Image (cartoon, rainbow, N blue to C red; front, top):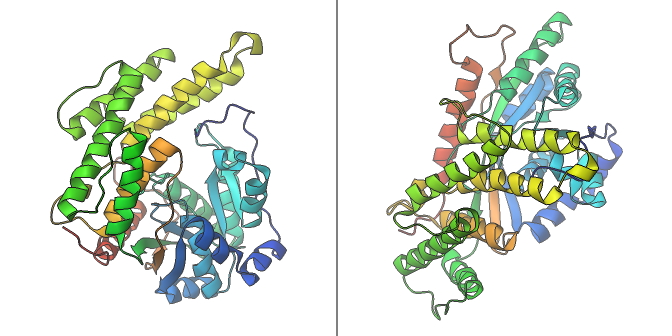
Length: 408
């Protein structure tokens, strides 16, 4: 659950020294973590010289990658190692509340917290100050959250351009030079046969659902059929849990109806009214903010934590269901990585964690630097910085997706 109810938000600053990040790089600790925890065995950095040139020029630098796996912030350590620098990164507050070791490790690698459910001025000021000083490059994920759809770019949030422009304005006043944004395309590629892996993982999911698992991998068509059956079963279970009954029909409209029902159930409890222009992510953010604010504003004797957790779960599930795109398993476009990602999303839903057991490599492609102007775009017009970032990222993600093995 992304909403933290154990304690009120408290900003977690980044570790400013170089001792720990240098030790982490020298002892190859990120390599060990990626290999043992994420099954990412190697990384290939492309166009790293673009990043190196911005460093040499003394720019304030934002690295803006697509966000498809939890490993994304860690694999950027390989890029940092190649150009001989350390990084700072903005990370959601809930990541600092798993255990003390992870909080310790995140800070030592340069992460600091952002409270996504509210107006976190301290986090924004920290990000802007990092760029103004040019102390280290800053990693910001413009999609906001991860969803295991490596081949599809989600809508970008405008927080990246706000931070970049605010820093550019301050640097201009201090005559420190430019702020630039480097789009970074990340693509994970299978190093093993995904067909056999998928058969084993689907058999485990089928047993969990009390089904008789298939005893042989079968054709890719049969594999897709099994994958869709498991997806339908998971959706039906959630429909029963939150609405009382399973519906019928195609997956996509059923998913969309459940998302709407989940959002309305939570919004009604907090007297929230969704605007016609608000998308699911914005409605989820408002629900999370209301859950957190109401919970800590209620007297201990009068609040039921289970009720608030249930509302937060509704928001999380709505956003999670949104991560199953309609076109991901379209015939003629099905790759090994798409099958792996879809199975891992279902594993996260049912087991709480994906089985990171298929060896992968990651391609890290650095885009051209986007200079950030000081002035704001005219009111009502699209932000040209965000448009350039979206265009570059979309082009890179689309191109990199072609490197996966086509199965059907």
